[in-house]
Length: 203
Image (cartoon, rainbow, N blue to C red):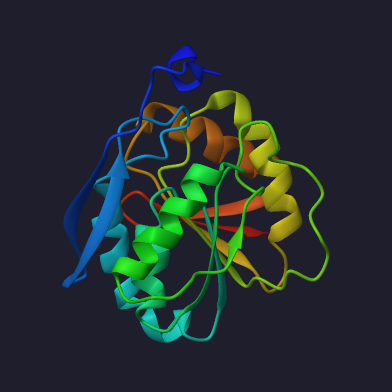
């Protein structure tokens, strides 16, 4: 773990900023630092939001899980469009407290959360049966090469006949093809449905 994150002298600094996703203005509280980059909104979310809006009718029929929710902006955006969305990230109290805070300042009481699916050390752990998700979404999660094998295991559990993934990747483009190749080698199909947005399914 980063020493800065552990030292008593470090105090988070929070700042509320306004973002526009799909024509919708959202207030998001971001903070100074997080060892897994879960502290700020990344620009790729705005492009992904446009794609999600284009597919809103489809999304309204799905049970959606977001991997790597970070500030929660995408989950909040979809919840405001009445999508059945569950947020997930590493099991870090600060992240989930911030998602709850951001939901409330945008008029949402709460967003369902799974705190242990996306974590560099926990990807790949068995999950409870019967989660029932039909669509997995994720934006800019391909940061850590060493987590890819565990992420593949998690997708192997989550993806099935009735579930697919939309992966938006606009940060760490250098790791993208490595992960997509691993998906194909594992037996998943990969299709680019929009520039840098990939649909991943089990064959």
